[in-house]
Each structure stands twice: as C-alpha cells, then as structure tokens.
Length: 165
Ligand code: SF4
Ligand code: SF4
Image (cartoon, rainbow, N blue to C red; front, side, top):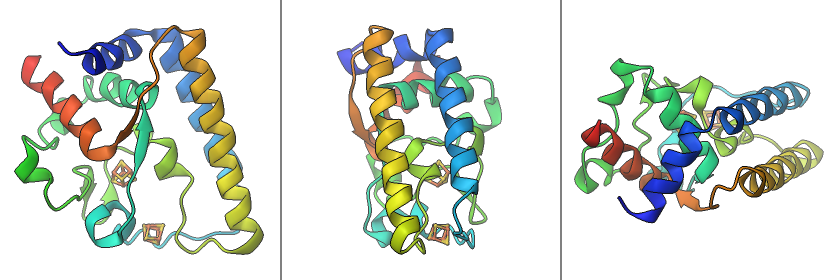
C-alpha cells in the first residue's frame, strides 16, 4: 500500500480524529446556517468539470469519508472504478442533483455557496480557512500525515479501499 493510502487508512481508523472531524463539521454547518445564503441545490458545483472549480480535501476528511462509507454498503458502488469514470469530473455522490454523502461531505462542500456575495462571501471564505487550519493542526495532534487531495485523487484512493475490502 502506498504512503497516501496508508495515511488515509490511519485517519479512518482513528476514532478520536474522526470524532473531532465530525464535531468540526457540526460547528461549521451551524456557522454556515447563520449566513444569508441560499443554495438552490442544483448540483452544478458538484460537476467540477463544467463548473470549473476543483474540490480539495485533506487526509483527515478523506479518512472520515472512508470510515463513513464502510458502514454504507450501498454507497460503495458509487465510487468510480477508474480514470474513465472520473473523466467527466462529476462527484459520484451526486444523485438527482442531491448529495448522497451529506453526513461525510468535505469542508469545501459545506462552506461553498455560488451565490454568496460581499460580506457573506468573505465570512464563508474565512470560515473555510479557520476550519482548514484546525484540520491541519488535527493531523499534527493525531500524528497523521497531511495531504491535500483533489477530489478525483480522493475518489481513486477510496476506490482502492473498496477493491481491497
Ligand atoms: S452552491 Fe450554487 S451551484 Fe452549488 S448546488 Fe447550491 S445553487 Fe447549485
Ligand atoms: S460530496 Fe456531495 S456536496 Fe460534495 S461534491 Fe460530492 S455530491 Fe457535492
């Protein structure tokens, strides 16, 4: 197993780390609810190719996703089998324009609203930065190597786990 996969596995198996990530997600969601932004749930921003924006996630976030997915057998088959399935760059968890992995979606999914403007946009960006900083720190505290992965790379790591499980 290569280093990246080992690091994600370590994060996924660390109950303390996963608990802190879950708590951070709860806090971030709470703060986001205080913004005056509306998401029409059109799913466009989850079609990265079309939308022209990449989603990035840390080792801890991908580990948390993998730990969650392991308990959701029906979701495992959504993870793309290879590069060709990822070529359209659409998140595999997008279904009928809705996210089917809401509980485990990454910080970048939670703190993004295409229609946020002005002070709301700034607050949202600041929230992302603050939580990302805490996540970076969490890697150090839990002795897990920090990687910052594009979503395609994250999906391919998760696929390796699915194939090996
Ligand atoms: S943030 Fe914007 S693009 Fe993304 S789902 Fe909501 S309305 Fe659609
Ligand atoms: S995990 Fe959910 S919110 Fe995030 S990109 Fe995928 S479908 Fe969209």
